[in-house]
Image (cartoon, rainbow over all chains, first blue to last red; front, side, top):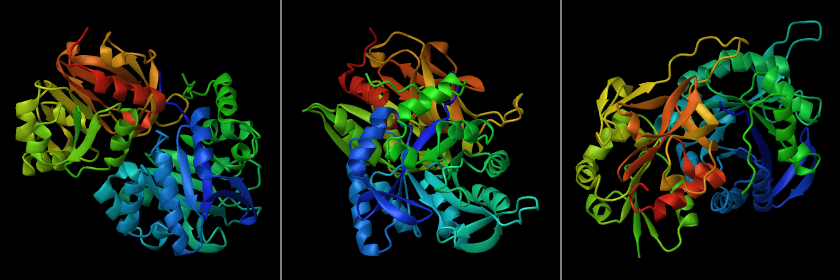
Length: 261
Length: 215
């Protein structure tokens, strides 16, 4: 018996629909979020992450409806993020049924907000989402920097130290996305994942770049991630969650056996 | 109609546990309340909560819920969840040392800082994610739940009951710790049944059906 590695499908939500793009281009419709959440739950997903990529504020209400509906029938942890900037934002999402709230840009521009949110609602529900790119030249050692605006804007902040700082401020989990890999299907940035995972005491969710089941294995074993996040390989039916778990279990990774009785 | 009171003392998100209980309830009425008199009249109670125990006990006291619990403990089925299990112990070493409700003799301690693992990985604290629960005794609360079922945990402290007979389930995370404790009609779980999919929902359903007796 031991703690299982987690497999977490990620649902990017735009105007109430699940969408998936490659490096923020070619956005494709992947379906109804409640239906998809239900399917992943039945397949044995360990958690679900919803990221609101809706640009406008008036469409944010649809995300609340989605979360509320999913939380009423899917009983696994739900993390919701996208545009979370204030304590009232956190409270609204938790009231809608989120178990954890993911803070992205605001954790960079205002790290004290992470401390306030963790103090008020508990570290267990505060996830910090870090978008990271290697800013070094090809012939140099990697230099990982925090980026914002979908990987377009550099902050100049060194990623690993920043992750440690946010954990000290109270973040309970780190959602780590390699913007170099996101949407490429070429696998996680293992060096980055491992560096962050070794640097912080809280769990790390690896994200960005999953193309096949071996990528999940490498992220968990070589990258030492506690959980792996993936979207396309599940949304478009390339693999089911159960197939992913079987693959990992066959290779000695502890996963939750979630056969529905 | 049977009533179930979820004790709301401001410690964390009660929406999830209320939603899950409503989902499995047949005709029970699920109510969230901080009113000790109203809660004392309910047929069964749930003591949830997340956060730090010092603040938890302060709030239970401020709202006069500790006194209410002192009177009703043992009188009706009660389920503690997560921070609730810690609150039911006699004492916790968290928050600089806190006396708790005392339904179970024993203490709450922090997970030991992990030694380096042989492969160089570190064991994370909090213990967060899905882990298995070994059923340490035969009991109606385990009805239709497979041995070693998976449940969802998030915690940095764990309870250490003085009496082995109060331990109904254990989990392995560096140490083997008590993840389910049970004394007459009071029971408590370290994990979140409301987030533990089918096994968790079954446990909640079993709690709603439970007459407070062992077999």
